[in-house]
Structures are given as structure tokens and as C-alpha cells.
Length: 77
Image 1 (tube, rainbow, N blue to C red):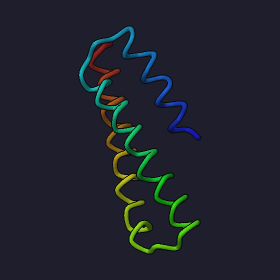
Image 2 (cartoon, rainbow, N blue to C red):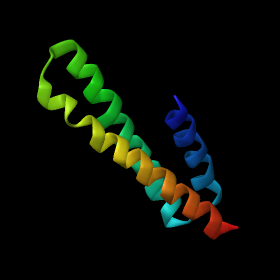
Image 3 (cartoon, helix red, strand yellow):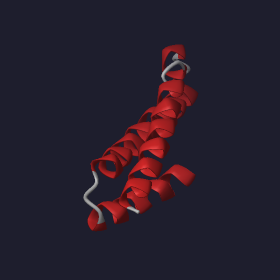
């Protein structure tokens, strides 16, 4: 839920600021949502254990997205 809001804020920031870290943060949030939420959804419906192992990769992309978003905003200020 919070990462969707971060993705929306990142989209608004990209329209105003052309910093590359903010652009990359948006992509990392998008990839994180697909990997984290998508793998949990598919795992819960199919019980394929391999998909549960992908979930932490989505969490790492969320963390990287937050770091790049913070860096991009601080760089812009």
C-alpha cells in the first residue's frame, strides 16, 4: 500500500524533476510491486515454493527504490 503511494509520488516528481535517481526509483518500485506482491499472490494460489523465494528480491528492490528516491530528492534540493 505504501509503495503504491511512493510510486504515485515518484511519478509526480518525474514530471517536475528530471533527476535520474528519481526515474530509477520509480522503476524499482514498479519491479518491487511485481516481484513482491506478484510472487506472494501466485504462491498463495499455486503453492509453488520457488515463487516464495522471489519475494525477498522484491523487498530489496523496494529498499533500493526508497534509497534512490531519497537521494534524488536531496540532490534536487
